Image (cartoon, rainbow, N blue to C red; front, top):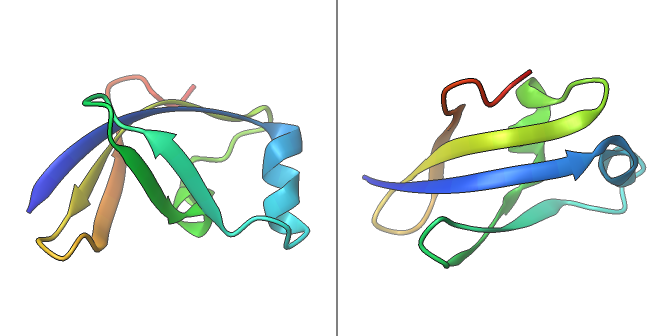
Length: 77
C-alpha cells in the first residue's frame, strides 16, 4: 500500500456543486507533484461549515484504488 499526501482547500460554494450533482471527483496535487483524482464522496466526513481545508493522507493499493483518506495533524478545524 502506498501513501500520498495532499493539501485541500475547497470552499463551501465549490462543495455545493457536488451536492447539486455537478461534480463527482476531486483533482488534487500531491506533495510530490503528482495529480490525483478521487471521488469527492470520500471527503464527506471532513466537510465543515466553511468547506474542507487541510492536509490529508491517502492510502492506495498497487492498482491505484483508494483504500482510505485521513486528516494529518490538525487538518480539520
